[in-house]
Length: 117
Image (cartoon, rainbow, N blue to C red; front, top):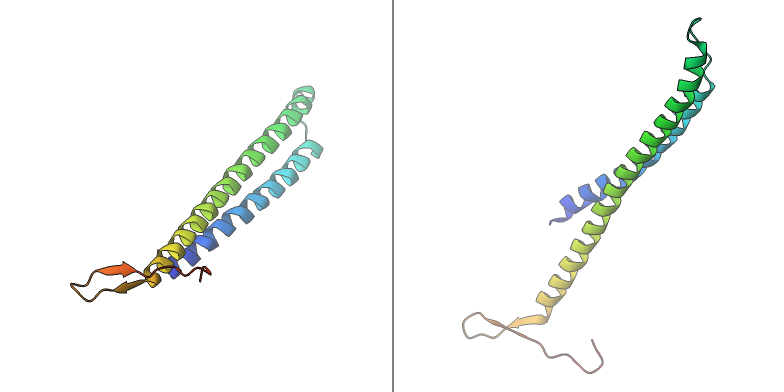
């Protein structure tokens, strides 16, 4: 994966995490708004009061679920990006330690020094 693609995936993962936070905040605001609203029809006052609490709980449940899904997707994308970046870094370090042999283009590894460098 090239650097430009990795940066876009990084941006997407952060956007998903922040989007999850925004959805959670909006769900809380919506729940409070539904629970404190005072609009009732004359004949169905009791039913609306009872249903309002159920609708508020449902709104909060859906909001928390959606926020969790967005945050989870963002975290998974971030983890995969980190693992891919580490693997790419290790691969580049491995290629840097190889040197051409001179007899057909094959490479051999340089021996490691005792001090680990």
